[in-house]
Structure formats: C-alpha cells, structure tokens
Amino acid sequence: MKILMFGWELPPFNSGGLGVACHGLTKALAKENICVRFVLPKRIGNYDNFLNILFGDDFTSSPSATKWILALLNPYIPPLEYEAIRLEHGLEKLFGPTLFDEVGNYAIKAHTIAKAEPHNIIHAHDWLSFLAGIEAKRVSGNPLVVHVHATEFDRTGGSCVNQTVYEIERKGVQAADAVIAVSKLTKDTLTQHYGVAPDKISVIYNSVDHEEHEAPIKDLALAKAKLNGYGIVLFAGRLTLQKGPDYFLRAAQKVLEHNEKVLFLIAGNGDMEVQILETAIRLGIIDKIFFTGFLRGDELKQLYRAADVFVMPSVSEPFGITVLESLVNGTPVLISKRSGVSEVIHHALKVDFWDIDDTADKIIAALKHPPLRQCLREYGKQEVYQYSWYDAAKHCLQLYSKLLKTAPAY
Image (cartoon, rainbow, N blue to C red; front, side, top):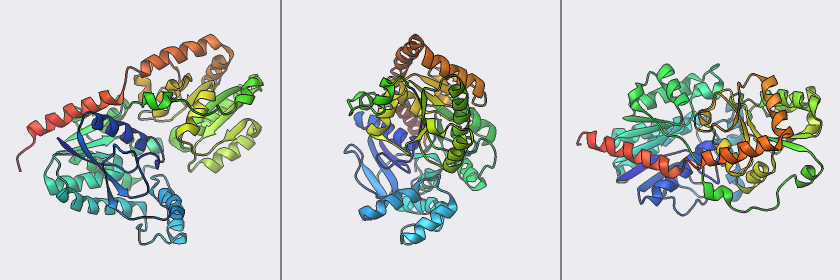
C-alpha cells in the first residue's frame, strides 16, 4: 500500500492543530511500515526523519525569509497582510497574489507529482489540500480520501462564511471516495451543510503523542507566581471568533471579582488580537492577563504544566487537540460542549461557550477545590490514554483497504 498524502503544514513549522494532527497520523502509519509520501506546498526547513516529504515548490529559502514564508502559508492571514508581506519581502516569484492562488498552484504541482509518484491511495487534509487531492485523483484514477479537520462553518461560527473556501470544501468532499471527519460534530456539519451522505463519512478521532508530552522539560514557567499563591488559568489557541477568546476574557473578569489572586494566560495569535487586548483594558483586568503569543513545543508544555486549569470556550471546535495535550501534561480542563473532544473526554468541566457565568463558576470551583482538580486530572488523563495515533492509523488503513477492494481497475 502506497499513500500519497497532501497536507499544508507540519511541525515545527505549523500554525495550529492541523499540522500536529498530520504529524501524529503520519508517524503512526510509518511505524506500521506503511509507505507514505507526504506532500507540502513549499520547502521551508528540516522535518523529522521518519517523514518522507515531497515539496510542490522545492527551493532553498534564506533564514531571513523563512519567517515571512511561514506567515504567507498561514491559512488565517488576512488578504491585505498577505499582499503587504509578499511585496515588501520580495516574494512575488514564490507566491501568487492571494492564498487562493497558492491553493490553485498546489493543485497544479499535484498533477506532476501524482504522475511521477507510485501510489494507490490519495489522502488530502483540509480545504487547502483538497484541490491538490482532486487533481491527483484525476491524473491517477486512484481513490481519494479527504480528511476534514475543520469547516468554514466552524472557523466563522456559522456567519460570514467565505464562499470561495466553502466551494473548495464542498468540491473536495463531493469528489472524494471517502471522507474522514474528526468528530461526530464535524460529520453532522458535513451532512447538513455540504450534502455528504452519512455512510460516506468515517469518524476518526484525533489523538496526542503521549511520549512526546511526558518527556522532561526545563523549569516550569510562572513557578514564582504559584509560590505566591496565585491560581493560573490557561487559554491556548488562535485568537479568532471560533476559539471564543472574548468569552474567556469576560469569564475572567467575573472570576477576578471573587478572587484577585488569579492570572490568566493567553497563548496564541490571530485576527482578534488587538480586539482582545482592547477588551482586557476596557474590562479593567489587563494587569491579570498575560499574552504569550503563539507557542509550540516545550514552551507550550511549560504553560500546560504551570496552569491549574485549561479553558477551551470554543464557539465550534471540530476536535480540540490542545485539550488532550493539557491532560497528558497533568492539567484539568474546562471545555465547550460544542467540541469534538467532548465526545471522548468525559472527566472534564463542560459549559455552553456563551454562558460566562457558568464558565466563571467552574473556574472558581476548580481553583478552590484541589480534590476536584485532582479527580479531573487523574481520570481525564486515563481517558486520553484510551486513544492513540496508532488507533487512528489503524482505522485509516481499514478505510484504505476497503477502497482498494472496491476501486475500479484503470
């Protein structure tokens, strides 16, 4: 079995959970001795040795340009910022005028790659790679699996849907021979808004690399604050409407009315960054809010381990790998009921994202009662270990095998 897999990003050059999920799944498939050729749109730097990578554009960038190339590949970059970076840093020859041009160029590269690379299954991750997957299927005639990690309805909260992104997503799921959804929540979205037949969709949950997150790291951040009796509450995710950082701040204000010795950490960046900063000032809590920017690796693990509770108040979260990462690092979680991860983690505090009073009450309870935190930490971690990337890989292999048995001969 030879898999030609199209993605958009991988650690350590990822902008969020999409790259983490692709990395975990590919690593598990590699351990099963499955030949996976993972395709990325552009060469940036060095990746893990187990990865067998092809690049749509195989160029060597200068270290000074890498930062800006990563910025342009970020699927959440505003159009005006994209154009400004492209022109200011002389990247016109490497990047098209818009991100949509890059998605289209990736599909053009996929044509050549699919003709040259032996494979019998095509697997494409999220809308950025769907057109590439469709073109590879057209060239080779091999079955196409599209893996939906998020939809435009999740990213926008159901309002102001970008029609171009939606059409690419719809085209991808309709052209696919099989669709993978990361949760039942995502499956429901695909059936309701994209017209996908339920029996075409397999739910395969994400996981977390347990060994990676249990590895020792440097001294924990914020140790002094904890010694001084402060509780620490963590938000880690993009600062976008989907992730609910505004609800996090409003709940924080209510918590601080009851307990002033609490610090709130916000790890991430995004289009709401300025708005969130201004909201913290307006609410009069800016002195208790710490913005770390986007973190990954050991820096993020330090925050997980320092926090007393991790909060994910997402408006619509297809899965939520950060919840698993938090639990593996020993921190209990408070999560939105509208999330895929809530389908698999039951030892968690759960809230409606819009109910800031309930969110605040549960944060206060978690900080006030160590036995509650210990119970959530211990049993939540046990639940995380019931899922692994090996399980996800096994389900993918079963799906691949099924498609190969029913695929027409070309």
